[in-house]
Length: 602
Image (cartoon, rainbow, N blue to C red; front, side, top):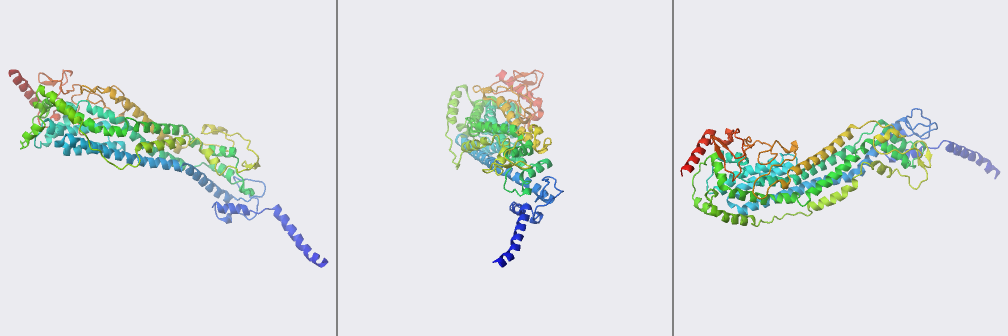
């Protein structure tokens, strides 16, 4: 027994000595394990046992440590990656919903365009068979231009509508007001096209259509733009560049505890808030603008889905065009008189169906006063013609998509203001622990002051110094402000084109006095539709102050044709090009004088 004890004594002493060494100099095994699990870098960077390292710049400590300068460098790379991943995780669903609904709104709008196109073509087929085929191309062009406008690729909605009626007038004149004609010359059709705005054959209906379409289509255009901007803003904030001070503070908060072998302890929540609010100070300044952005989305969707929203406005195009055509037919004699003075008589060849066509649709120029009542009854019957229903497969309506989307996105109204809190309440939150990491040591509670959100609040941040504004965040703010300006522009426009400004009884146009922004092409008044911008297809507005409307007989002063309200010093025919090479100013005056002389003699 004694021999056995003597042999075992040295072994016991050796074990005791090794145990003492181990207690005095703990291993860095747990640090190596965490280093590997978080894929921070190669394990060879982690020492086997703690040692002093005077090169440390962030996790400086007077005692032996498991960290080295190269480990600090890796920690800085990884901590930036982890915080960006946290931001991306929190914003992933928001961005996905915005992008998904941007596509959904475009598809829904495309479906509405298809339905409205068929609806309008059905109106022509039911009421105006003689011109339905030719009108289909004009209708197609109208709704194509509307689509381009909504996608921010085309001209203003005013120009779109007025260009449509410019193109429609030659068809109406040749097929309805003067039916049975063969194909007229291109020059004559072009003259009709160019003088539609001056002759104003459709009365106030072009203005009414602009009024119906402007507000909902502008809201649709702004909404699609806003959804693109929202996605871009999230992309920019997901890839925010952290400053050197922020990165060092993040390493100190997240990884300096590892240097002491404390790989499981979590930062104090208040401490985390100071660090994250410092790092995200510029992003937090997006909050006010983001809340306004959400409010704009709410308002835009309300306009789009309202009682006079996009769907109702597009489906009203057909009935408004029908009423405009009927107005032109009813005022056929006056229109014919003005057309003959401006464009002359068309060079035509009589066709065999002239008599039949005349019986089916008598020329308005030959109407007698007693026939007006019969024509009124005809227009009433045509106005009530049934239109074919267009069947489409729409599993979810735009209204359903909009309601679900807005219910969801309203929850993200304070997304940027609460971003720091969301990160700190995630993996960094201590789990059932009475102690936490304060950046220097293990404590029971964090005692420093907790600062608020935003750049101005960081002047008193105890954990880091925050630099000035971030150019990337400033750009994101400018993008959100741009949407707000678009929204304000919509409000101005909707006021100008209020239907209350349009007379509904006599076919005359009431000039608007509302303001208008440059984007909408407002260049003055007097063109029959306020704010119309001149385009490549329209002649100079030579009757800017002496519009001649159907039913208002022109008077002759010398060799100048003027309307009763025109200035005597402004010639109505001051633009020879308006005759489309059919007549010169002198020939027009001569023909007019001879016509009045013959009428007087008879």
